[in-house]
Amino acid sequence: MKITFPRMGTSYIAIADLFRGLGNEVISPPPITKRTLDLGTRYSPEFACLPFKILMGTYLEGIARGADTIVSSGGVGPCRAGFYMEMHRRILWDLGYEVQTITLEPPKGHLSDLVQQLRRLIHVPLSQVWDAVRFAWKKLELLDIIEERAYYLRPRELVRGSTTRAFRKCLSIVRGAKDPEELAEAKSQVEEILASVPINPEAVPLKVGLVGEIYVVLEPFANGEVAETLGELGVEVHRSIYLTKWTRENAFLDFFRIPADRDAKRLARPYLDEMIGGHGIINVGETVIYSRNGFDGVIHLAPFTCIPEIVAKGILTKVSADLEFPVMTLYLDEHTGKEGVRTRLEAFVDLIGKKREKEQGVAW
Image (cartoon, rainbow, N blue to C red; front, top):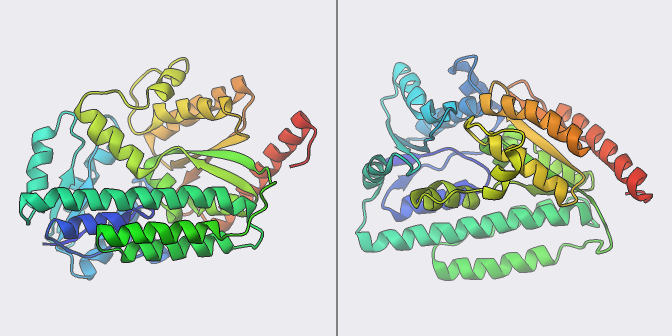
């Protein structure tokens, strides 16, 4: 099989290694561009959300590169994302692309289906499977660490753009690691590169939490590069979700029926105690947590027409009022422009900066 898959942040680097380690030929998804989005929008239903349209374009670009199989995750609950792979498959077949699709559903309620789909991906002896999974997981953990460190460094950097340049260099190094020994060496190099970024150690930047639907939170193209822009505006970003965290909660903990995000769900309960799908409840609870942990505000990223996030947005308005805590929702679709996002972020940063100055008597 020649496999392609969704591109979501930096995760594609580790996912490509995983599929190769399982004995597949991998057609890595190219960087997402306006062409990708335009292509996906052309062949998607108008009411479909932004992630659906980006994935549609990504799959078409992957097929053009020779892919004959698409692998993606599924979902449970009211969120429509659980139907995306089937909808994508039908659209592609209508266009004449009779590609195979493999949907990896969360174990909860779908364990036998998950095992069956995984078997289709494994073309190496079982003794090699664990090595492939472990290597990809370690690489994914390192990628998350790099992103988190970049969020810390960017608002403190002394040379504009030095963090972003270091970040891209780190990604290149990690991408090139082909085995555990090379990955260990890559980790050492990454630590040196990030430590070499000159910063102002006395800086006390504003702190903003990012919550929202997983795809638009993790994929910079989808959100107009919110995290990088905030960093350039002097804001330290804390993302509520990373792919390693999501995988632990939706695979490992879910498999053993251990409730995930217990604190977030508990804190959301006074405002929202119904299963609305996606990350709706978690986003409410995470916002409360950010407020209690001394953050200056939260930005809620939501694909336009996403039902769970529409519900969460209404609840977050009350959370913001009750806690006197700034929350801004950014709805994202194919018409969203990076400059428009930046303008809204500048206004929000100005607002929370003045709020801190008023409360603490210190200019930020």
